Image (cartoon, rainbow over all chains, first blue to last red; front, side, top):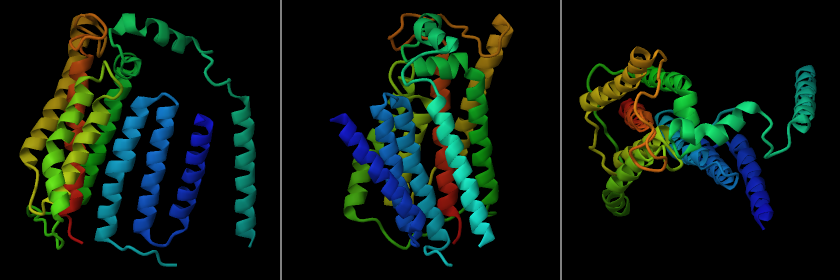
Length: 81
Length: 229
């Protein structure tokens, strides 16, 4: 059962990472990166590393997203070729 | 064209070597190194910390943690220097937060602060510690900044708190040097593992780190909020 859940999470993580790299809208990319961080933190928890899971959830999914969103709001939202 | 070919070749070499290395590593869950054996079986007795991760991070590898805190301090100082404005930054948000966000932040802000403090006070007992608790506290302040367009932290107080906690960490290390001959020596008694007041100086260090990390990360967010577009 847990293998199926982990496999699903890993596949979702790969999809989100590819989307974050490919999309031209940086705001969407930030949200996708946040989703990757959240899934990584879940996987850390499954691997019995709650300390790392906490750090990943608080810093990766929380603070980094805030910093990125602020930086995008102060600069530009769309990528130019 | 040739550039693309070269990059593909480099990527293929990296992937193959990565796979070769990863297939050679020790099987998952087997403790083969001597040092991890020592941490697992003697860590609780030697440090008095029920959370072995804290025992390694603050006791066996305490000096590395001091370096880590220093790196974060330098990063926060760098952000402050890069985004420095001569006059006190005035926040001018165009969009007021919705009622849901405002009410939610009123309800959740004290709880988030309390949870962050809980994480770093209990760092030697339960998972988590100074870095995690500090990050949770900084997240609480981000929430406050989003919900209230006029809110701003007390800069002088935050700087003083950050400096004081940094000095507590370094001061405890020097105390160990003076009393026992080693930097960051555990000068207080270990106590019973699992109790709140146990593990010697580890809880004090983690409280100092929690306050320091929280103040630094909040300062970074505050700087980024205050900068002009």
